[in-house]
Structures are given as C-alpha cells and as structure tokens.
Image (cartoon, rainbow, N blue to C red; front, side, top):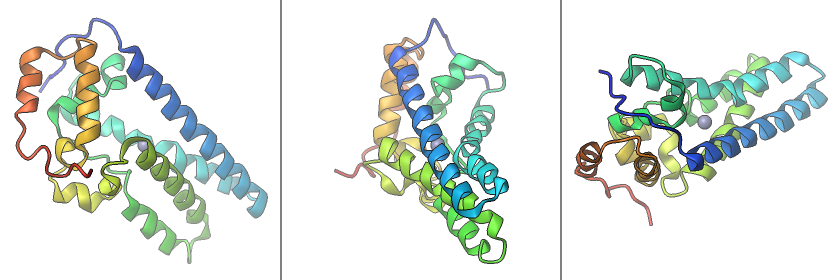
Length: 189
Ligand SMILES: [Zn+2]
C-alpha cells in the first residue's frame, strides 16, 4: 500500500510548473467569476465559479489517498502517486460540464459552476494534454482502464522523468514502469 520510497528534497522544475499551473487557474477563475458577477449581479455566482474553477482540483487528494496511506506534502506536490499508474481524477470530466450545462436550464445557479469548470479543463488540456486532448473525458480514461501511461503517455513520461531527476523514485521502480505494455498506443503525433 505505502509506495513512498525516498524523498530527499524537492524538484524545482516540478514546483515551478505547479506554481504556474495554480496561478493560471486562479487568474482565469477570477476573471470568469468577476465577469459572471458583473452580468448576473449575484454573489452566489461568484462563489459557484470559484468552486468550479479551483475546487475541481480536490480530486487529486482522492487519487493520492487511493494509492498512498499516509500524508506527505512533498510526495503530493510531486504527484509521486503516479508510480501506481492509475489516475481517476473524478472531477476532471467534460461529461460533468455537459450535465451541469443541461441542468442549468432548470437550476441557473449551476451555470457558473459549469462555465468555470470548462475554463479549468481547457487550461488543463492546453497545459498537460496537447498530445491526448481527449484525456479529460471520463469515458476516455475509463476506456483506458484509468491507466495514466495509456491515456496521457506524454505527461506520465514527463512526470516520471522529473521524479527520477529529483531522485524521488528508485531505479528498479523506474525500470518496472518503463516495461508498461502498450505505452505508445495513444501517443498522438
Ligand atoms: Zn486541474
């Protein structure tokens, strides 16, 4: 269960990437939330936009605790749990955006949630899924058994490389990961 191997320090490249990622999500969500407040004149729309644009990332905690049974901030920030290869990201799903959009025809307060979630997923696609743009569809990940190395091999490889550079994963663990079957299957060029 416990797959934390050794954490001597942290990888600056990963930390920098994380800061850029979070800042971008914050700025875009703030822009969407303020625009929606301006048009709707409802504070609740501002709050819903923040839930959709920022709190969507809380599903990373679910993935973390599915693979690791004790909390370690560095391990979490480095996405160390990717060595398990399984990634569910239950809230990162265009399907949820579509359902919320449909429901917002009856319950309008769901509209800001759907708009902000769409903004978040768009950034994630541009930043992390240029080579597998479908990977933020839950059905697409399901089709690939939620195997990170299958539904977004480029990002998986980059993450493993960063972990290796930082000395966060052992050599034999890396060898084990590289022997993954069908690893090029979904690499769109
Ligand atoms: Zn995200």
